[in-house]
Length: 314
Image (spheres, helix red, strand yellow):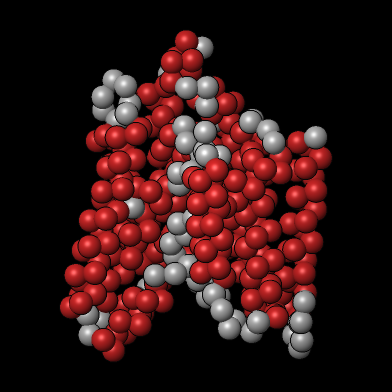
């Protein structure tokens, strides 16, 4: 049953990719297809990275309503953009080399997350709940600092910060994309290699240890992969707080399987369908009159409330 569901999702994703590539093409097919193929690769990478990172984070935290954004990824990213605009101005920030800026943002986000994980998981028990609470507090602190910095920014340059506050899929540079694909592919391969051990982790710490799993080492490895995947996706397109929650919840609903060998690819396939089909509609039918990232976050927020109120996180 699960394999049939994955096959249907894969077929739907392939159809979405084909429609995205060929719909409305006029003029030079080679140029248009090459341009769209780059955007398509970015959408697939972001979809897989966010979906897998969220699934792993929910497993290690033992809670289906949490996402990596809970530790303040999105708030830290917006703070970085705000400080950058305040320091050198919006025009200078826009003219920075894309590769250097991407690498810097990815490094800051990943290192901050790993530092948080390492500092809070030193105890013998590996208190994930304490890490989550600390992440919430840090997120509030980052948002407060961002609000203070934004008050100091020239109003004429504030638009640069506003643009960076939402995920953007229309303009993705080729240079950062290839680096992101290399990092993302390595992290996704690592996550796939851990799929059976993640099934054991999902049983709980005590059961995992009794079955011979080095829980502490596995926990840190999983969180490092979460940091890499989330940092890469965020630095490439911007913050996506609730998108991972949306697609992982749909994966549980559609596939009804507890195995990570099914849930991770299923969530990645659903994420790809949502992003690619959504971007096709926004580009071809709506003429980019609205932003896909805002709609996705709104739907993800509704799913969060539904899970919370319906206690679907248990």
